[in-house]
Length: 229
Image 1: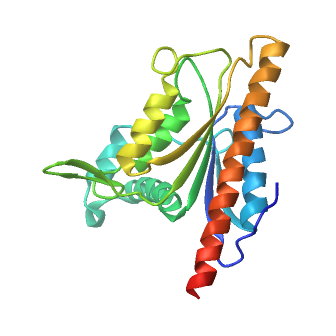
Image 2 (image 1 turned 60 degrees about the vertical axis):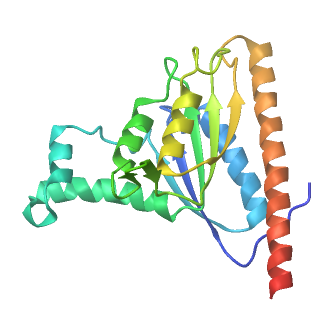
């Protein structure tokens, strides 16, 4: 596969590693495959401005009553501790808003997403900032993003039956305004070597297909930009 590097602009990528495995020679499958996808995007786009959040080494605190109180306290009235809490959430939102592309590696834990990924979504889903309510319903304010979800499943799961990850993530991302979502799935990883090999091969084939599509899109955009110059 040939690649056309985009030298006119640097893609800003936000990577979320949500696996509990710390990656010190013990990376989770979702992290490994996310890295392979990122390497492919790097070949296509050239330099990437990469921001990585690794929840195994830098856990996202769960929202609690004190955090909510800080968020709802006017800035001028916050204590230093409250200001620090809000600043942390603001930083997560700023990373999300700045990104052109999101690459999120997600293992299935008990039929759903890891708790710290849910916590991250609780921090970044803020009314008036990343979404708003109108008389016609909610409107997502985080738009213009490409999202890649790389999912790792120990077994074989039907979406919406025992796989609650895909419906939840599509709903949450769409609620915030991110509708351009691609999903890579490696499943059967704990069902024996044959199923594991098949699951990894399936996921890598999906990644290659997505990279081919990304390369075509990048090439077309470069051609159109050249014609307009």
